[in-house]
Every structure is written in C-alpha cells, then in structure tokens.
Image (tube, rainbow, N blue to C red; front, side, top):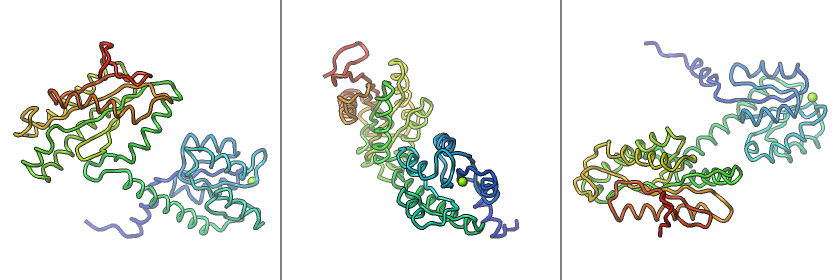
Length: 330
Ligand SMILES: [Mg+2]
C-alpha cells in the first residue's frame, strides 16, 4: 500500500469540515467572496442581516462568526452586544470584517468582545490564515475542555461536568415546571472486590459496569457521570413512576448480566450495583444538594438491606421523601 502524500493528509485534515463559520454581511458580493474563500474547508452559513444572523447563530451554534460592521437597520456593533449577552452564544469568537479604517472603530470592536478585526478590501490568504488561527485555538480549547470534563478510566463525564450539567437541567426544569430524576449508583462490596482481585481488575470492572448502565440510561435519554471511586451520579428526564422503577431495575440487571465473578460479595456471587434515585420538581426552595442527599438516603437503605437493587421515591416540595405508595420515608 502506498502512503498518502503529506499535503493530501494535511488537506484532508483541513477539509473534514468539522467547523462551521457564520458570515453576516448585508452585501451579497461580500458573502460570495467569503463563501468562496472558506467553502472548501469549512461549513459556511450566510446571513444578510444582523437579525437573521442572530437567528442562525441560535439555530446552528457556529464555531466562528465573521461579522460586517456597517449594515442597515442593526449594525455589527449592536449585534455583537447581543451575542455576548446570550448565554449559549457568548463563547463564540467574532471577527469583524469591515471597510471602516478608523482606529477608534477597531478599538470599539475589541472592547465589545471581538477576537479580531479584518479590514476590507481583504487579502484572501490573510483572511484565511487569521480564521484558521482562531479555529485552531477553538480546537485546542475544545480538547482541553474535553479533558477537564471527562474521567479517563471510564470515559464518562466527571464530577465537574455533572455540576455544570445538573445546574443547567435544574434551571431548565424550573423554567418549564417539569420534574427530573437524579440518582446515585454504587457498586456493591467494591472494596472487597479490589482486595481480592486487585486494582487492575477493579478498573476493568468499573469500566464494564459504568458502560452497561450508561447504555441502559442512554435508551431513555439519561446520562451517567463518574463522581467518585465507585460512585456514579445520573439523571433521567421525567417519566411515570412505574417506568422509572423499570429503567432502574434494568440498570441493576445490566450489571448482574456482566457476570463478573465476585466471590466475596455479600449481595450475590457476581458484581452488582445498588441505586438510590429521586424524582423531584425543581424549585427555588429545593437544591440539587438536597436531592442528592435524598438519593443517598435511599441508596443507604438498599445498602443496609439486600443491595443489588434500586430504591426510588419522590421528593416533594417540602423536601420530604414519599414512596410509590404515598408513604413518607424517614
Ligand atoms: Mg456592510
């Protein structure tokens, strides 16, 4: 097999179109030029007005925005203020492309949060190089972000990611007056497993257990995070009580089905997991921490009894745990 020439590999790397650039300019001729410069390497979206540009930014969440300053109705300076105030869009780098030659305008652009300022008429290779540099920074930032939010052993998102995501889900649930399910998974007698089979086997078991539960939760739009040694947090969208109990039972069963021998387990003869989970209607009087404490209480009950099971209840607005029969859980 002949090896690929380096320039082809480099070209392919640059043309896998992972990045999307949104170009906003009121003049079609400028949009055409920008599209022709970048279309071979990146996904290009175009907008002829600030209003439409904002809509496209919200809809497509581009990696980079090229923004004209002088536009009728709303200009580029006005639009960047909106972009920077929008929680979902404020991180997107904006490069101004403008015919304004004034240093004060350039300074204003930077003050409003632009990452670069390119003057028209533009030199194609300089525009291309600058955009490429910014996208390279984004690529590296995404990579760092990935490492900062993932657990390398299980390849699950980590506690930091959990904290970010649950806060987001929690606030969204308050906004929509919808409930969420938050739970904790703990592997039964895991210390005994490590003591008998060694940490290397323990790590393998952690990977298998977490990925089997992840698969079950994934089918129901749930997500699991590694938040401690053998402890995992998860959330699920709202559902009927009976359905939730069913999903949790499937998670427990998926671990048993792995049939990982655990001769010292008190629960059974293979590796198993226990789950405590709470359905809650998020409000300003309850916190994520309260919910986790409740989930932990339920988990503790399983741990004190059979293990290898899921314990599920509802946390009411007064912060009290109610089981499926409507009884108060202490
Ligand atoms: Mg213009």
